[in-house]
Image 1 (cartoon, rainbow, N blue to C red):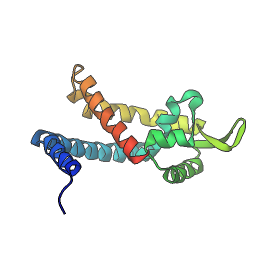
Image 2: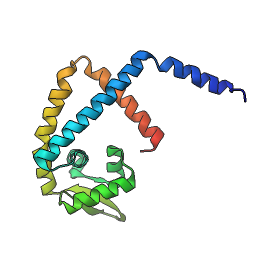
Image 3: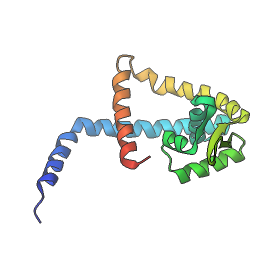
Length: 166
């Protein structure tokens, strides 16, 4: 079977995109991400008894208007499937950090809202999180580099969201 022109175009594009500098940057990105995730997760658990995914959910709710989001909004913000988010929220409700609230005018839809205990836990964990941002990210990126880094990472995140449906 002969390759179609479209396949050949895709292969050529792949060769142009997968340059050694880009592959090296990809490897460095994955290594940094995994290392940062591991250390922050370990330290949040140790200091606050808070898993990193829980902190991420609390942070999204804390920044939201009225400190509440729909399940769909929270799933999108966290890049979770709806079933994965349901399991996470079940555990966080049991821990008293969030609550499910009926949406006014739509009994089928729920808001997830931060509780006072969730606010307290978020405030306890935030200094640890910010310390990590300073030590492991801000210390290595100059102010004039930050917009380019942000732009590249947002393009990647948006492409993944589009292609994965998350």
